[in-house]
Image 1 (cartoon, rainbow, N blue to C red):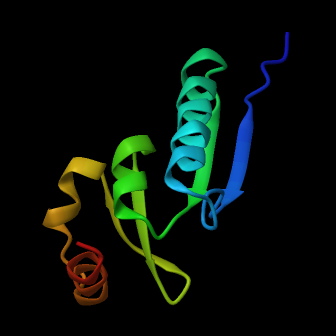
Image 2 (image 1 turned 90 degrees about the horizontal axis):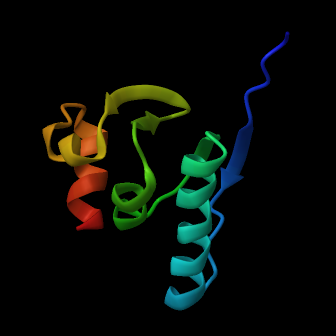
Length: 90
C-alpha cells in the first residue's frame, strides 16, 4: 500500500491580516499539523509567528539556506545577515 504525505506550501499566509485573524489562521495550521500529520512549509518574516508555529527554521539569504535551527535556537544563528535580520526583528 502506498503512503501519501500531505504537504502545504504557504507564502506569508497572514501578512496583511489583523492580529485576531492571524491567531485564528495560526491555530488552524497548528491543528492541521497535529491532526493530519501534515508538513507545512511556510515563508514568514514574523519571528513571533515562526516561534509559535515552526518545528524547524531555515534562514535564507539571497535564496540560499544559511542556517537550520529550532525556533528556540534562533538567537544562536551564526550567519551575519541572519543575525542582522533577527536583531532588527526584535
